[in-house]
Length: 298
Ligand code: C5P
Picture 1 (spheres, rainbow, N blue to C red):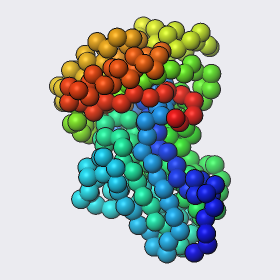
Picture 2 (picture 1 turned 90 degrees about the horizontal axis):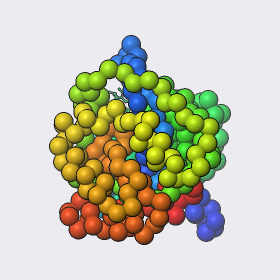
Picture 3 (picture 1 turned 90 degrees about the vertical axis):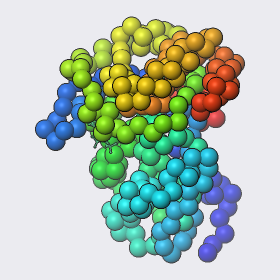
């Protein structure tokens, strides 16, 4: 095996940042049962990490605080291995890779952990195997792995529509601070979609520009919702307590659930109040972290 320079080594270690749905409106339903969404998606600096190294066969080792939550699940269900096999198949790669997933984000929790891990795997393995599928083929691989994988692969703040395949990047979205909090109970996405009772929401009517992060939070509170929140709370009532705990944090501009839950988030426009809120919620026994929203990973 050839030596890997430190620069190349860092290329082979990719952060899988938490995906946050600032707004998530269900606007319709396709014939195949998938729901049409209109969602504002951003990424937090709080992240899993995928590292890959050359190997003859494909293997995955899971480490990190939430690694045990993935132990025992069949390999065929693991999004990281599925991503690796899809890319190898599409690019005609016969060699393998040794993959390590550092699982820092809670699983089945609405912040795209599995989708972000799959997207980071596609990025890291393209570098390791020196392959570059054409963008349409890569988009097809991503969507085949899950509706949230394309936006995680893009990595920029985006308006996401369709079931997740229509992406409009929003590079000027103001940046701020976020607290993520979770009651520690996995919530299954299909069950939340099934439990949703309300009809369909209109499309988001986004302004061309937000003056600052506070203006973004004000707009979100007044003009958007997460249409999956009520269904997720009905399935997992502790989510309501997490939302209340985040909203009670000094400096909280908006508290809402992300994706199909149960992770909830609070927006803050200063790092200190976000960190204090995360500390307070952790002391109450919940998983809670603060970080940057938007921009490069910290
Ligand atoms: O695509 P992904 O595997 O993440 O979706 C998991 C499940 O969530 C789907 O099988 C479907 O039941 C539901 N879903 C949906 N509409 C979406 C995304 C997911 O109904 N846009």
